[in-house]
Length: 109
Image 1 (cartoon, rainbow, N blue to C red):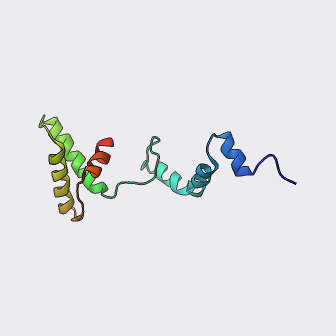
Image 2 (image 1 turned 135 degrees about the vertical axis):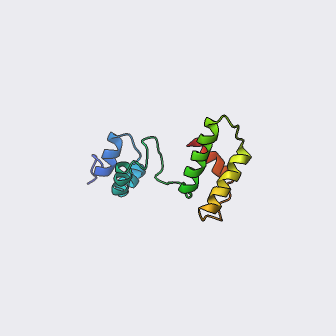
Image 3 (image 1 turned 30 degrees about the vertical axis):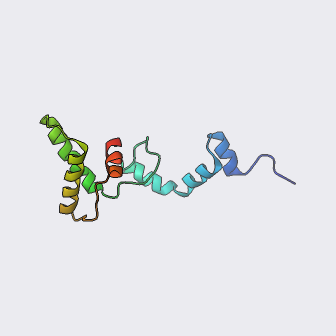
């Protein structure tokens, strides 16, 4: 005989308006999510738990950008990418490219 009330996880997903696969993924990663939230590593608007590959480069580029902006020095995209590549080399990331993809993600954050 078939259970019409549904499985516990499926019923739970319907109660919180999530797809069963989303709820299942969340439940599997629950401890990881809780650790990142406790450490303020992820904000509530974050959709994925992935962090930047070159977080140190991003921080250095952002600090430099804020300093230049405070001095009213105009910064264009190629200059920002070049400074990021320079920071990456000095931080030991010679493979960092400072591509337009990196720039787009950097500007979103």
